[in-house]
Image (cartoon, rainbow, N blue to C red):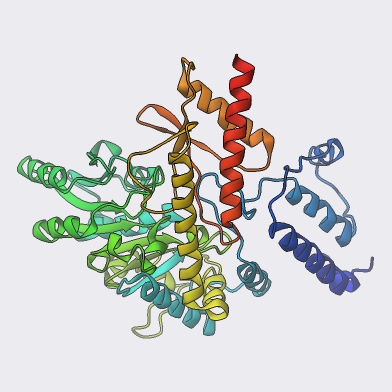
Length: 473
């Protein structure tokens, strides 16, 4: 090993790059088919991961092999039967884009020439794909930052000057579905609004925000001298994938002059499909939207986006003058309309994915996941072992639970079933508590998942239900 300067690979550079390519190719091929069992860390690897800080290094190839072993024995959302939570799936061209982006290490805090143009173009393409008239926005690290960015713009519009003066004597309120993601609560706490002033609007029998209840809450709050700042409608709840009635909510927001934000971190890509575009009717009327492309658009983390109809709504809360941030006349820097300062080129992975695959391939993959959810729902609905919710999946989450006879505690049984599935290793599922009941919660957001994987998932669940029943008899 020869290194002419510290922290360079020297003559190992080409060999290390080639070795990395072989590891990546091996991983991609492994992802093509589901494993029949999960690999677990060896005792020797666990010991290596407990060693103190090394004073001297090892060869690049040895280090890469060790990293590959760590990754191979980790839970990887890229695997086709990883159906827990809402995962990303490591789109291959996106992984290559990340290698390029991190190698060049462009910073989008200020103007980065072609990279800045690409960033803007990708945001425009994403708006076109979803059907939202984007006037500007930013790629962020995740849905939480995207939602916070939108909410701070909403706060400034409702309480002009609040970025400088604070909230003063104003008591702001924000409204969202009772099933909304916790990032909304986190955002209003960080913005000084306070979670006490977050209104969890009741949901209907399809677990969607009730417009009637929303109107009543807004009317009551305004009569009490409170200031509504924003309504956050959910474009696919994390719990079951419910999509709030955006058009009806937009009517109310327009009537009262309230900012409408759509948290579409998980479900919004379905708006680009012919099967679900009508479910998102009214999307173009929102003031802002957020989407995690690293979820149902398959690219590697992190690649979230927040978009607004009017870029000035972001400029009004983020622009500033600093001696070390020059402005070229009226041209804005990215930090003048974004929350983050140092920002990597997150857009590259989505830009390259659109370039290589085109919008139609994305629509086809999302539609395939929708069909897989419907298939699992039908299989479970026809089974005497399982219960499904009375409403069909709106998107790609399929809550289901075991209902064996002569089991006194179904919640404990289903929790044990989820543990057994995870220990089995052929499929990876998570659980969720819905109205006090424990349910399994498969979610299809992987372009590698096939209908065969759906059938295997169903078979594994039934097999393990029967095995659990036999051990309890």
